[in-house]
Image 1: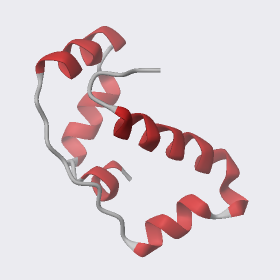
Image 2: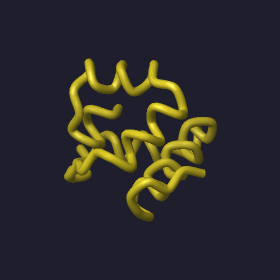
Image 3: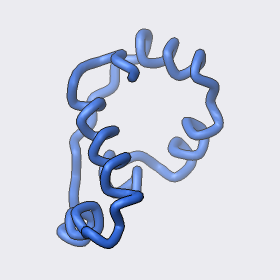
Amino acid sequence: MAKEVFGVSRELAELVAKATDSQLRHMSGTTVTHFTLRFAPSIIEEILDDSREELTHPVLKKLQQSLQGRGRWR
């Protein structure tokens, strides 16, 4: 999903998933990254699907946090 939503490679998504909280906090404060949100219609349908409630809320929360500003972790 990270590849579709944020346009990142699978390798990068796996590395970020393995990183510690401290490493991610440091990277968010020292790395300037520009990205564009990209959504295929099927991704939007999947996120908003009522039968996938266990996925919908966490995904929308992370998207909201990523749009709120650089280096803000909640």
